Amino acid sequence: MIKSLKCAARIAAVAAGCIMPLSGAFAQTAWQHLARAPDISATTSSSNQALGAQAPTARVCNTGANPAYVQFGTSNSVASTLAGSTLVPAGGCVSMNAVGQSYVAAITPTGTTVIQTELGTGALNLAGDGSQQPITGTVIVPPYPAQSCAASGDQTPLSIPSTMTLTLPNTSCLCAQVSVPQSNTADIAVTYDGLTPSSSVGARWTAGSQFQICGYSLLVSLKLAPVSGTQSINFQYVK
Picture 1: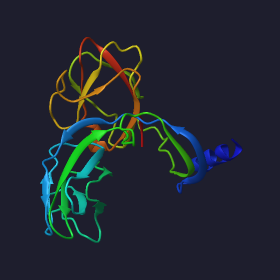
Picture 2: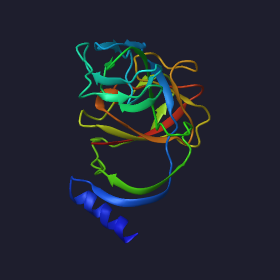
Picture 3: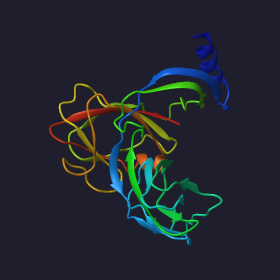
Picture 4: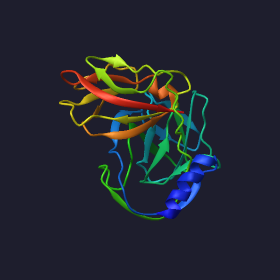
């Protein structure tokens, strides 16, 4: 306990982060699918595809028998290389940061394979259901962006009577802590890709959900709509 308090104080004081022991169960927010990019038929020459949507996390899967290397980028000039891109083993999947990215590229060292890219929010864990996963060992804890960026206060709560686009207090807001009140009587539909959310379009945020979204371009593209009635949500902004 004393070591944890010392670490918290050190995180507040310096920007280098802190290393601390951690054991027990780690609660993760369930993975929520938002969109799927076109498949890439990867060869020994790099090729790319537009993602078609934006999301904080990408699940990249290699469905073939040959390994592949994957690279995200902001334009159709992005290229994947064997030396500098992320390995996706044959028959395997990896989770990658997709904040602000618009294209994904892939290349193989030999032969061909197919790369599938799914975009979403939340944690990708072994169970795939957001359940608690036991962990033990040493965890690197980066400094938490605790400085508020809300000039006029956080949106706690933000009423959602109909479809709306999230409006941030200012451009210094890089992350939002999101919590959905337990008192909500219906889900909130959410999109990041310009589509209008509805009961059949977008991800669903259910009562009691809590998570963090980072990336200014992602936050300003967020559209919200109650599946029914008027619902609410809490946004606390940090930078």
